[in-house]
Length: 109
Image 1 (cartoon, rainbow, N blue to C red):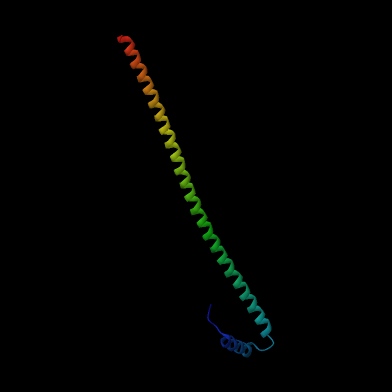
Image 2: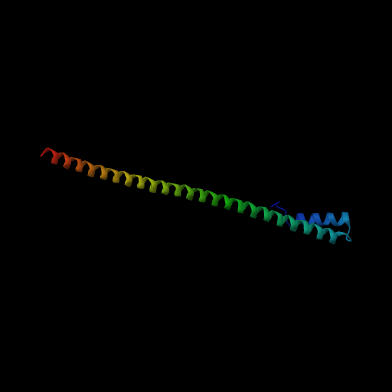
């Protein structure tokens, strides 16, 4: 992450040992280790949260697409029903027209 190698850590350790002394060095190392661990956990948690948010957005988009597809299917069903109603009305009209023609024909005789 920071591109710090072994020699950089060794130099930091020697400088810290000179400044704080050998008595306090173990407690400082432990404290720094704890903070590094907490930082790693925090970063991991943030990465998981971002990943979960991305997944939830993808799921929302997928559900929106399915909802749109459902609306299209419903629209097709409604259109098909309307067409069938129109066909029935036309059939009834034709039957009525035939009946009228028969009545006219019988009257004209």
